[in-house]
Image (cartoon, rainbow, N blue to C red):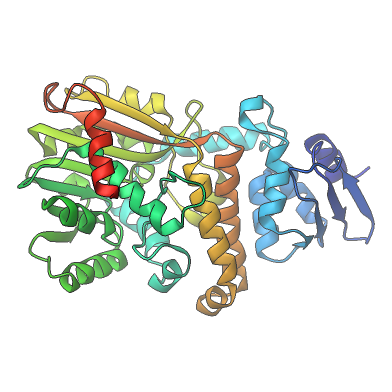
Length: 407
């Protein structure tokens, strides 16, 4: 029996997976399961076997990207869902882990990643300075490139992203006349929303030149460029103080070695009555490392934190953790919407780049879906306050303000 047969026989119990090998022979693994779509795929090159056994995510990704692995029944999302459905994180079994030497190497690589200012800008450009047209093809109209908030599974992506902004802004307790800092402002949607709904002045900062151009243009077109400003600057170089800070989907790019620097810098940028809301992807388990596919192709230098790492980095920084919320399935649903839209726009994405890029991008989205569906990934929303009396004593104010904003 080939090495790949041993590996798949051990990994696949639920759902049916059929493999066609380079010599034309086939093997079937698992048993049919109504919750997992059957998948048939072909490996065209024996070299793929070793790559998959050594590092399943990277091995499958690179073989899929360059056409040495093709899927005849189902699609890449079905394949990854079937595989990870057999190794759900909460069940305590992972039959798909990279071998231990790859794991040790990943932890060493993570420990050595510094993400200094120059490297941070290059890493951001790798992902966020892709064609603006690409993001138009699969994001909502406001170009929110982070976890949406689904109060109803039937609601549209656009409504869920609007509800996400309301959910976050309600926690910030913004009052008229305040100055707000948006760290990692993306294409400006959150900053513009904050000004529109609260009247606050907002400064959005980014390291992406392409995002900066779009954000500035949107502020000018809305006639609020004097109230909503955007700047190309690293958070470590910012001066001044703000009443509120919001950071959505940026902390994942900071790097664990910089967590304490980031949190202490944000604390120092706040006024004595200041409040911050940190929204980040997080690990439900403990510290880990970034998988090689993501680090190589998608988010170089990125790292997803555990809650324990964030709170440990926050030790002895004199502000209060005033609220923590864990969003479990919201990003999985968001990513499914993005995946469907990307697949529907295949021809347009291939025209922008090529077939290999499309396969890489859909593997990235599908891999993220299964990480939030069957893996340990969640979203954290953590609220910080410099003064223990700066916010109401109960969370009722959040619910009341969120209803107002959503209505």
